[in-house]
Image (tube, rainbow, N blue to C red):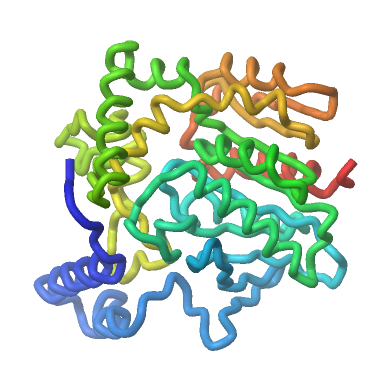
Length: 370
């Protein structure tokens, strides 16, 4: 467990750049090679995930991407807004991804594909994460993420490209919980889609931690850390995944090796990895009380929007929990699509899987609000 105030985003990045520069210097790559002279130039100047230029906009053949900012309770939130080519009013979607995500991870995979399908898509860093503001860093708070998502819809409603009657919410992995929370509270939300959900339920916690005693212990530790934060502002941290494949960390939030293998490359702060954003392998310890002690089930009977759920036998939460939650949603304007035996990580980065999901999402969000 790590303790104390959060490390500044710029300091973390700078440390990574220095380390990579030293490696490059020690290796002495040939001048003019891909890791030669250009490396030093890349390490200079302010951090950017893309060469945004003065316009903060990148034009592509199928869509443009704008680097945008909106505020939530006075804190700046940074996002990438994907805008399909063409002048008609478009449906629009704001999305949340896995636990402690940054926009350059899973959300950008869905946003870029939705834009190709004609949907305006907003992938953003929630407060306390990535390029967005908010202290302490890496604070995972469901209520704040729900508020961020509602503010993202309000931002989308101001855009001239967007049909404000067709605003949708997309949750992926643990983001499904805050997506449902926002949908039941936000009148602007016309449609809801949930993909490969890590649904916060008692059954899910037991699935990951093994026994009720293990769950109770992690929840108690999380509550103690949350109490310290409320009492004097002290922020305790735990790793999200173990730092190395051969260095298990039983205190990490997620201990399965395949999850480590997905996440840990995102901690690379090298200059050639800036497009991956500012993910950090840590989370506030108090979040464990919410993650392992949370219960999203009571929200599902309150869903009134047309709902699309996409899942698979080996996705997070397993097959039974999503089916039970789906059955709890009233009415008939709902659809559950099971994509065979695909696993959770395929919904994060496998192009064949995401390319199957994207058309389902675009058809759902492009439909009229009623």
